Amino acid sequence: MMLSATYCSGDDVIACRQPPHQRPVVIIEQNLANLDQAITQYLGLGDIILVPNPYHGLHMIRMFEAENIEIMAVVGIHPAHDTTLWAV
Image (cartoon, rainbow, N blue to C red; front, side, top):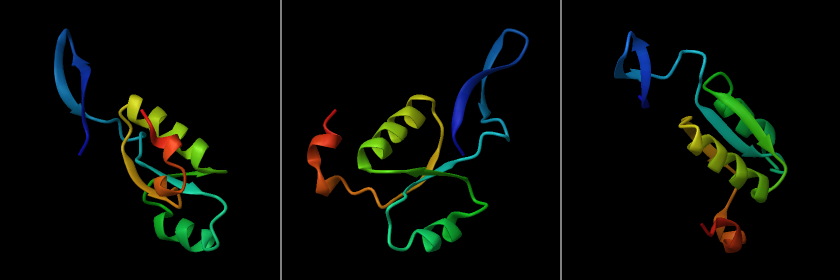
């Protein structure tokens, strides 16, 4: 369970669970040979985000982390292929 500080009632700030409409995400590189299998594996468990390449995948990972959105899985994006993408 991911917790975030949210105004739930009055002026009190308490830790609340993410809103039910904010599901975890699965980031999948769309050029996979087994794309259908990867999608089927996570279908219904979270929002599936298809990215065209590792560069866009990294951008999505950073964006979701900045928004405190849970990332359930990252499929097909391997930092070992291009380490320059993963430099902070």
